[in-house]
Image (cartoon, rainbow over all chains, first blue to last red; front, side):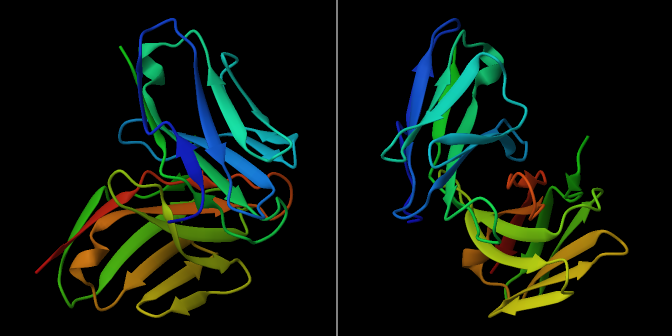
Length: 114
Length: 113
């Protein structure tokens, strides 16, 4: 158990819909990262937050947005969903963003868009 | 542009033998490298890491080797155990700036009894 929690575990929804994925980082970790893993692909970095502020953006679609709240949990919002958005979405956390500290991953949310 | 590549999608090794997983990268700005292990229905679990100032890091049965001139790293597992069967991801990052990890596509390791 990495200490990072993600809800829900599974989500099935239809094209055009909007969903929210939730992540709680490990106790003491201030930085949260979101990654997407599509079928047979490596994990692709989406976005990073540190202590409530956006720190870095990867190849995140404009239909996707995220935020980190004062209690440090984070939410990833996916809207106008398309079939190609079906993937595993992982959240990771680390102590701070500019260090050699490893990122610890949650169990992921499997999103299926039908 | 795949900056981190794991060219072997799968590897099968006999229990007790050495498993060697390989990873190549193209971005010379990467200065920290990590290996993660992933079981089905779980998130990746950190295994071992190495800074670009080193060429070897060892932790129990796991050793990571880094060849900067070749932009190549490898993970050695010895002896291999059935519980090592998983997907292994190589990842790289820059210590300055954004801390995002750039992952390879993964190698599925199967340890045969």
